[in-house]
Length: 285
Image (cartoon, rainbow, N blue to C red; front, side):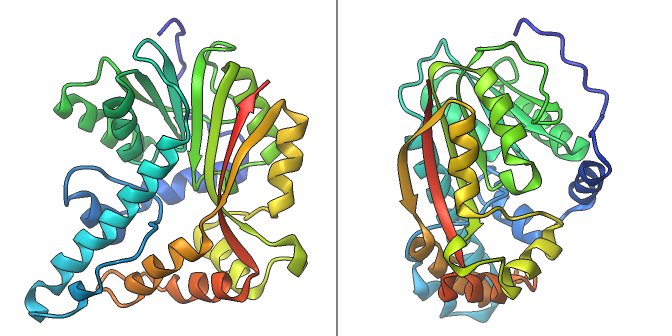
């Protein structure tokens, strides 16, 4: 690492300060208990068909079975994202923008053997993830920073790959992609998995507005991603609609002991067609 990064907790706008406060206070069992299954703490959702047999059997162990299955689906989602990062060599450096408690960052290091910088606006998440790095013996390679992803301070062209896993809805897309474009080396890869509202249906639906209010975020229209990428030298190489792949996860979660109250809004939004779950990969040109 060549830069001296100032981790002064600056969050920028009042809104970003409220986002930091939200995640500093968050201790939701659906995040914590799933991570305790194998030590990979995710802050995103899952894809794939569940093993529905976990909902049967002894009620005394139902929570454990369903938790492990939800975690498997979330890990499967992270593996899909990482598989789209392209060729990453051990000598490269990559960035997890909106890293949460660091699960995907550790998976990326294990997959590629390279240096990983995780960025979160939450001091609590950063401290937790850095402690995990120490426990795993990889703190020389996987480092977490309390920084605003719109202005990281890292060197221009220093990253081979960058990803956002369900964190773009906390930013202005043009500002975000401008910073990612600055950080990526020429030919570097950007990947996001995100929920976005379908422009064909007009403004955000009631269910999408409910999700916005729950997470104090601002879900973007699908078109906004491609427009902001075009403005910032990011050329899409793959667009994968994961909407049908994520619906079973939400249906299982709605039947789990870990419900948060937002599950029905996601199911309604996805099934209506007003909301989509996309993977977008793009190259920096």
